Length: 193
Image 1: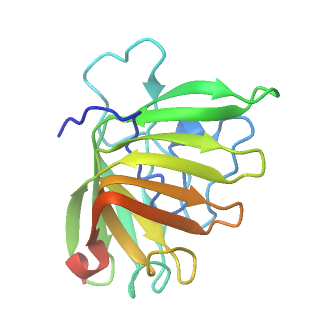
Image 2: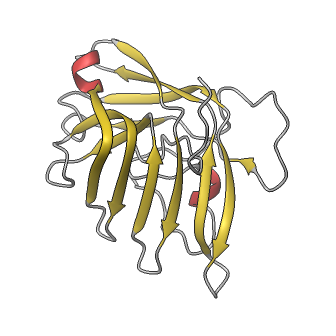
């Protein structure tokens, strides 16, 4: 599904408090959560050429234990990954300040206890502002994958596809303040229970 970019992003990044691989390695960017596996090559590489100023931002497979997002352990893996990023501005020290993401992303989310799975189309777009204290502000046009830990956000603990227009302010401590402007949530834990 192709979306017109608000200022793009496809982010399995938000999912576990991680970022696309290219963003995770950008200077001044906080490291990805230790609950995630290291970044690897995407399951599917874009067939269209990358436009000037845009570069691939692949997502990696990830795992979270029982009780972290859902009541059971979950594995996520991109089955389509054409995500690109474009740095829009930098801080005076050269670290990334604002970056846009766009592109198709489908993540297979699996309950590893039962094998039940769901392919989530999370081909949204966003502009992310990285603040010097490690916090981030996301302006998003979904669908995007969002994971929230117990007491770690304005949404209950869970794993969601948030579709529509919303913002997410991620504090330096990882707390996710999700503000739905015109959006709906789809509970993936319930889909694969």
